Structure formats: C-alpha cells, structure tokens
Image (cartoon, rainbow, N blue to C red; front, side, top):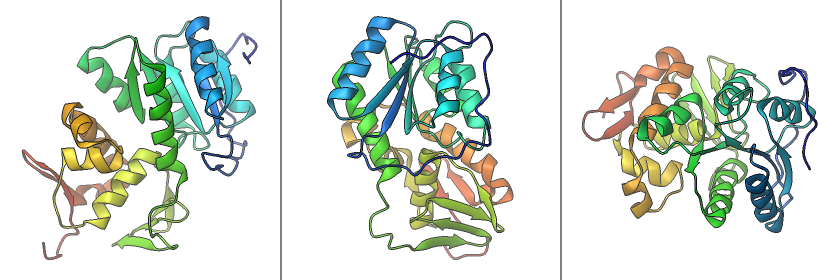
Length: 262
C-alpha cells in the first residue's frame, strides 16, 4: 500500500521501540521508497512473491512517516525523490538512535563511481544502479537480511573482547567502556570479522567476500573503496579504539591492540 501525503517531514520518534527482528522466513517488513509508481509496484510485487510484507512510499516525507509508524526490517531507498531527497532520508534515519541500525539498500540512476561512494558514505548497506534486474534486487535484499537476522555461526552467546571493547555476537551489541555503541549491521559484521582475526591482515577483497557476502568474482569487480568508507565510519564511532584498526598500505586492514604481539 502507499502512504498518505504529509505537509511536513516528521522525524522518527525516539520514543518508538524497535520490535524484535523476525527471521527472514517470518515475513520481514520491507519499506520501498520510490517515486515512480511502476517501479515501486514492480519491486513490491517481486518482494511480496518472496513472502515479504511490503509497504511503499513515494516521497521522502512519506518514507519518514512510514518509519515513524512501524520500524521496517529493511528499506529500499531511491536517492532521487521529490521534496526531501533519498540522501536526506538516509541521513535522518542514521542520526536517530531508534532507526540508525535499519539496513538500507539504495537505488540510484547515478552510475558514476563518486555517486555510489557518496551513498555508502551516508550509511547505506548496499546499492543497486538503475536499470536493475528485479531478481538481483530480491537476492540483495535476502543477503542483507540474512547478515542482519541470522546469528553468527557458532556464536553460542560468546563475546569478542579487546581492551574496553566488547562485541556480543548473540545480541549484536557493542559496548565501549560499558556504554553501547550503535553500529549499522554492516559495521557490526566488519568489526566482528576484524576482531575474529585480530592481529592478522585482511585484504579489502577478503572483507568484501565475508562482510558483504559476495562471491569472489563479484568482490573482485566491486570498488574496494566501499570497504574504506565503512572503515572510516567505524573508526569514528569507536573513538580512540578506532585507531586500533590499522591500515596496511596497499593491502587492507587489521585490528591490533597496542602492545600485543602480531
């Protein structure tokens, strides 16, 4: 269904509680934000066929209103929207503690590399350029939700710790000196991977394959600057501990606690 128009853009209320994430097979809710009705209907049809609950919004105002009513499990977001742009919607969702962890798949007609990077810098988890294959969109939605909703393999309630940093793999919470740090799903997976292999260098290609669940051929084609943008945001959120994510020039990254043997 489509949301009704509103004269002003409501901000997602911080008082709204995020409901427990259902499993992929338990009718996850997807919000499709697309101003072209034909494209929105096509996306909604394809996702509904796969068992998702789908709501559509045709403007940035409608999108923020829909999120305020019910937190979705994933947002498919067009960047070029009337009034409030998709970029502004993305920024608004990432700033609010209630909505900052919602996975977001960007749709964009802008194919230039810098435009794609811009979307990732703003906090998108993935992007897809127009024209796109409806089947590819469905597969990307499934991959994102799988990363977010399925527990880490063999987590067994265990945690990863490094100095003042604790990563709880079962609850997907990150604590720094006892205070919770809010990460996007992709940032969480990235930190988890670096901590699991602390002291060992991970190439950008390896991180793309593991964190973004891409096969080797796709990871080879995708711009590895995607990893750099997410590392930059992760470092900023971790404060001084972010400096423990070291850049290995010309190769990739590693997590190393000062004073530990490499």
